[in-house]
Image 1: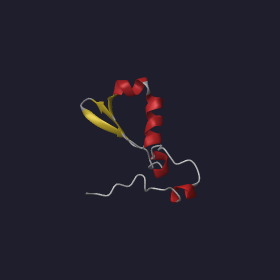
Image 2 (image 1 turned 90 degrees about the vertical axis):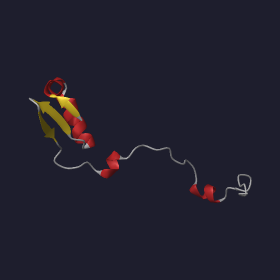
Image 3 (image 1 turned 120 degrees about the vertical axis):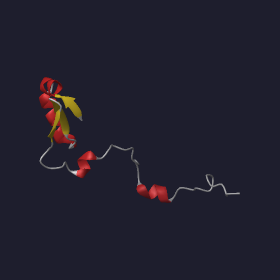
Image 4 (image 1 turned 135 degrees about the vertical axis):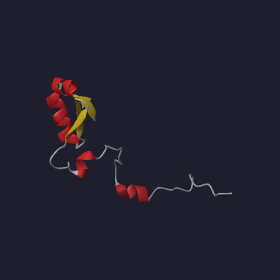
Length: 75
């Protein structure tokens, strides 16, 4: 994420918290040069996973589904 020093100053704590949470470095442009704020360690891979829809119910039910109605032979 690239921003000016003024933007960093206006919301520094939220920006720093977001950098710690996501691991994405912040680039600050100051007098034509770039400074980078990078967390010391990378966040856990599991914390970066996106939430997905999931199957609710008994997994054995999936094995007993009759798929013959859904099946179409390729021509």
